[in-house]
Length: 184
Image 1 (cartoon, rainbow, N blue to C red):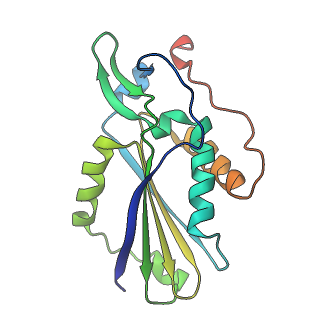
Image 2: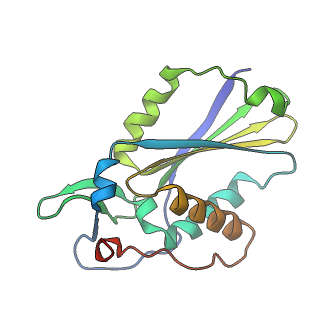
């Protein structure tokens, strides 16, 4: 089974806030410990699956509320590591496989560390990397990688639910709060 990359692009938030000067979210003490960690997950969906255009549109809408996931990790001189809210966007890679997706075979362990090299280099530039891989049977596998410093498991889950809801044209629910420094 060979994966063919069809395209790679940045998906920016559908709407952005106009502010004067750079906007930062300082990392909490917990986030500073994990600022070099990339966390990845894979989701498999049987056919029919939404189009790539629909998924990208939903992602752009979700990124409008979850701006940290469209930003970059930087070192702010005054406050140390931070998320720069520059609306750079999330990297979306579209790929295909000329085979049917036998979901039993998808989970077979066959790690290829060399495939992570580009992902690690890309993580310096963007916080979120998504790969949409379509199989000839119509199934879709979504690979999702993000910086742990920007989104822990709960925040990632909330974002993925919001993305799914936005893709279906539903309301996303409560917007994330970024005042975590006030909590610790």
